[in-house]
Length: 123
Image 1 (cartoon, helix red, strand yellow):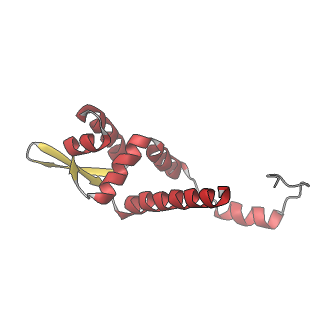
Image 2 (tube, rainbow, N blue to C red):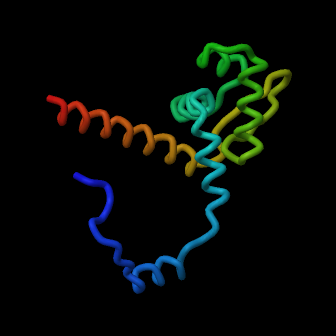
Image 3 (cartoon, rainbow, N blue to C red):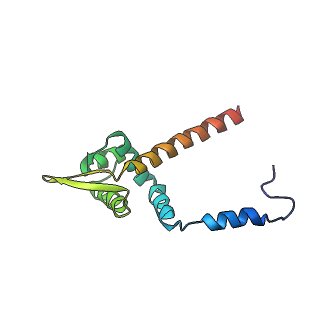
């Protein structure tokens, strides 16, 4: 199937409806950019499994130094995707809220479905 129309025809009513409801998406773009990094996504996914983890544990999960884990966690925190709390001498991280948890979980489910569809098509 071709990915383009055979003719060019703009539907002004549809375009007008969408333009009237279009919002600024810079924040959404930044959110997806933050989660597009595989290491940060692994951290976020880990925090969907274990709701609160210290930097050392996160570093062990992603197979990195604590400095690298801290860098990525700071990046997520600065974009309001994660939050931190000091407990004694350790810093514990968690996802900022349930929206972030849902985004990561739904994206993972969607990716799995895509793999299933691709496997069925190639069979």
